[in-house]
Image (cartoon, rainbow, N blue to C red):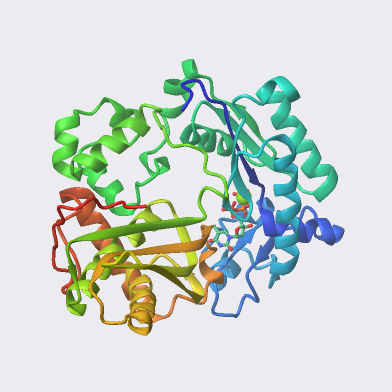
Length: 398
Ligand code: TTP
Ligand code: MG
């Protein structure tokens, strides 16, 4: 990876609400709240900046939004229209570089390293993209430029709406350090509370904090990650849609086995690994693929489509288990693999139909296990039947 990268982060302003204001000019300048009628049980999807002045926010119950902003214009929203606008915006990004990583319906990273000669310096490119979005899609976007993804995302948020900020290497401390620690990736309310207990409130406090003490409080892996981010260091590459097509793991048995219990235990373990990586990258997939290689090297793969995209271990395991039971011919197995394909990023929470009680519980469990693994290592915890099998044979055969 080149050391001096140029990353651009673009995020549309009040996306769904802006589209409604574009299509209904009488709504411009008014507090527009998307999500449904104020007496409905749902939550706010987003709202115009005019509504934000009254304290309305995404994910707030509609009843609360109504209490704060009774004169707001409440609309149900129109996903088909927002998806069409999103496609137009992404097509604009692709005119400048193929290195576009979609993060959500209204947000992407672009790796501009190497394409600035063609279109001008990064600021010129960012300005052009913003202008094209206004001209062709009819809404505004905010852009951030920096030498890595984390800082580019921080930058795009600094002057929202219609902002354009470039954080240069020499400005990192000045811009980053006064921000609250909640702005770091991976700091949710629980980690924030732990950091507060250590007297850490800003990113600067964290950057200066003793690393060993931090590791004691958060675990070595998390402590190191946060310390690096707090110092403006982030090596993650921009991953295009093609590069995030599939995520999988394989296991080669130390000895070929026809013991189905043993095979299923490994499958569970592999599903866990895949789920964990998906969640770490904030990805989910709609297709589960099983790969099976018998003792004589006959290899087959089978796919199953899910009703909804998932990143949950149990969904991946159940789908791959079904596939295995359907095809297994009783012969000794040499290798088994599971992958999730058809990946997408960041589903919009309240539009998902997944959040019934069972899935909510599974999600919580997966998160809890992720936390334990972050802290104590990959092999610290597993589901009950995932017995550990150590193989002497190479894991990644062709
Ligand atoms: P965001 O980019 O988080 O929000 P936004 O574009 O509305 O406002 P901002 O100017 O702060 O970027 O999300 C993009 C769209 O995704 C948003 O318009 C609606 C949808 N969304 C939800 O439906 N529910 C949510 O909880 C969030 C955060 C977003
Ligand atoms: Mg946005």
